[in-house]
Image 1: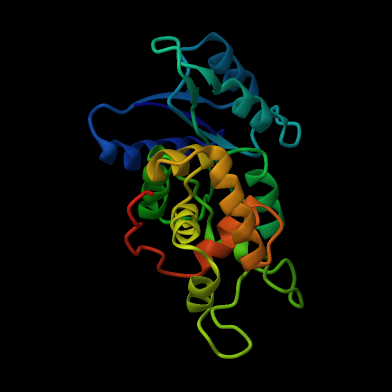
Image 2: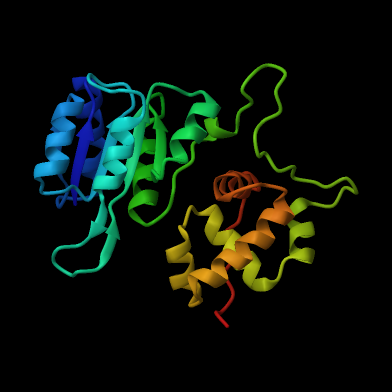
Length: 239
């Protein structure tokens, strides 16, 4: 696995490399300490299998370098001719929930605050490499002292029934399967493949899940689903 680490702090680069070496001897690294170096790696190749990119590095103009990386790593595999999205994960010292949600909406597969413990970083990368999306706990914090935490689905309903029990009563078995995989950060394509259904059917099920969770989009549903707690029950046999 070829990993691109783009950050202007040598300590961050070396720390991330040290931890990611636990993934195995097959992991190799390339570095960029400026946006210009990042763009050079993305344009000249070989493209990395995953890119970890700092939000605030020399040459950055807002989030434009993140958008460029997401676009550059979305394409067709030259060897197989199959469409492939190489994940982009943002590293940042910012833990503001609204900023995290904004970045996740750019199409990245994860957001890792730099204050995260090394094992959290490693597990987040494992999740992303496995096809998931890593949403940090900070994404669910309120934006101010009087604000309501965003998309934080309550664990119980007004009648005292556990929310998961309520969802079990209003969602079909297949919709619950989709919800469980959504909580693991699986994109629509992988949900469809795992459940042996079409992506169109996944979208129909997600619409029902959005209504049940009272959320507006997939990102809100992902955060709400992860906030439900243990969603690890076995997925039912595809039908």
